Image (cartoon, rainbow, N blue to C red; front, side):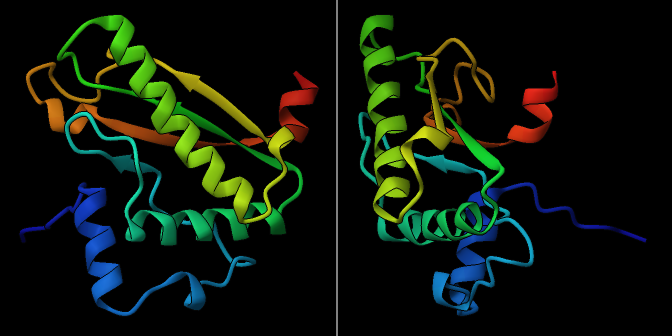
Length: 146
């Protein structure tokens, strides 16, 4: 038997959008959104409307779960100077944070990091995969217990 495993968040997200899955059809109380990575074009830091729709789902989930915070990790590829890559990864993380705040998530529940090109997702030559923002949910009850 052959099993197909889809490990491409962009492909999964596009399929969900094509099937009519939007922020309006998402039930925030049931489960957290599946898309945790947002990829960017070369030298870009703005979000497209599909990204914003998924961030609205994350915001709805966060508003329903007040003990959960979110870590936003901005990344870039290795093209250009590391100073510029740090700056670009910060712009990407800020764009995601602003979107969540506009949707009603408290700023105090958002923890941002920007890594530049220091933490590639793929090989350094696979620049498109490395230009991204990743979300990480943090349960504050557990974090405070540590």
